[in-house]
Length: 356
Ligand SMILES: *Cc1c(COP(=O)(O)O)cnc(C)c1O
Image (cartoon, rainbow, N blue to C red; front, top):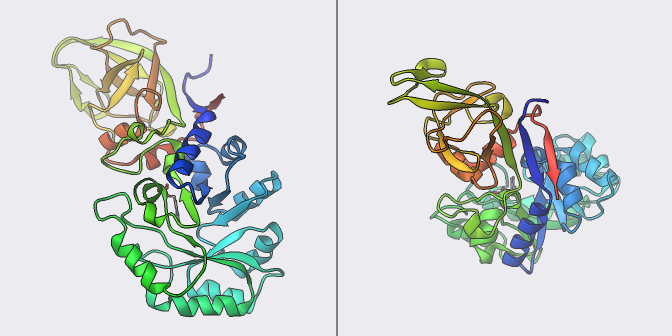
């Protein structure tokens, strides 16, 4: 038998979560965001599971071209756009849409126009301060994009910094609306948080990331309460059980001391599998469907858990690190991060098992 860890991916979860977004934003096209290998789930797998998607959005040109070659006929958008003029003919040839977020990209479009016009998303910086034209410069950028003849269509785009938090989208929407007043073009503004919490942002096209994968974009609303289904369950098994006496310690650095005699379960899953090394003692794990907690530092290939709540556990007992029965968001919160980071970090050495 091989090492007993695998990531189980229920293909039906993608359609389920996509439908949740469609119901939340019924008048909008929903692009499925598949950057970072579809947040660790596999781009080709998600594309196969979501033939109904209105489009896909990603970052990598070769991944976008592959989607096209695999026969996906609807929109494919590059969220960071192109990085050099040599990519423009590839965009045109494969009908790949690009964000246009900076002066340098505009200049490339003017100086080395693609052989055929491409669909462009003109990105406006409404407060994130990463990508996009400043609101004051947005109309001038738009005029240049229209004048250069390289754009087959133009969509106005922004990305919210605080759609998931108490600040919301009010300030960013004010900036966007004043930057684009009087311009009648389609818009794409919303990420998962805005799709689920801010209907006024929906417009023509939304961009669905984390919620497609069944995790919550919010700190204070669970995925379950949003009707989302987990799209990844990280499973393993106990590969050893230690019976230790009071005062014994567990793992590197001796960060856990047994207060009394106890059984420690050793799980085949460590940080080289994508489990967060920062997860402290007390992070939840399911053993035989029972909630236990980690005891001792996460190591490269193993974690250790306190088996007190599950006395029948033995070598071979099934373990869930996150997913079905244990929300990834809860594990992430213990480790001081978000579900996004855990799913993206799933290591290539972990086999993936698709289930229907
Ligand atoms: C990653 C990304 C998204 C998706 O964000 P989620 O919070 O995962 O829904 C949307 N838009 C842009 C520009 C992105 O980079």
